[in-house]
Image 1 (tube, rainbow, N blue to C red):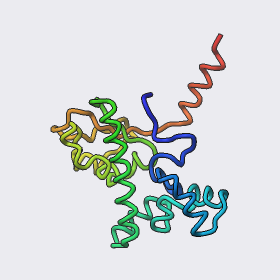
Image 2: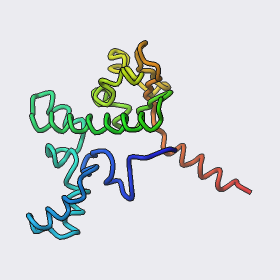
Image 3: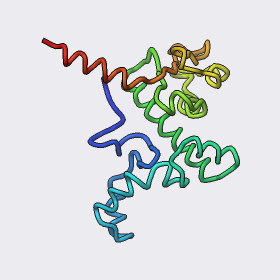
Image 4: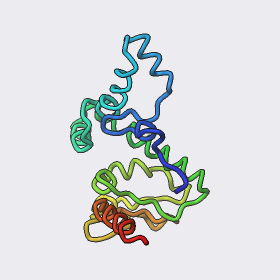
Length: 179
């Protein structure tokens, strides 16, 4: 591993359902002074009342997408922020690595949200990363890795199903059977 989007806690990094993601640390002092919040209250707000929830009132991305499709301005903004922040991290990692062989989407959002995958990689063609819109919209990783890159892409773009329980079992087996 070269890097991670999380720091000391999951609060650093991407906007999440209820977590703020990267913010200016001065926000803590601002909230203490202007809103009279304690350190514990600010920490709770950043971890449990921010992110998508703070932007539009919902932390379930499916509901945010449904509302955005109906024209809800707060939900549209939340999706724009969410996609922008993913794209910003992908771009930063491309800069650090210099090139990339593959980008893999996995987990609940990565496997099931073609719009988020599109937002994350839109405009990355100059970096050798391009989605095929048709492949992206129908990707089903349940039968194996789904390739969603276009012919213009020099990097593979894949959607791969997560199986955390299997990986935990494999790692546990290695530890238990280690001599």
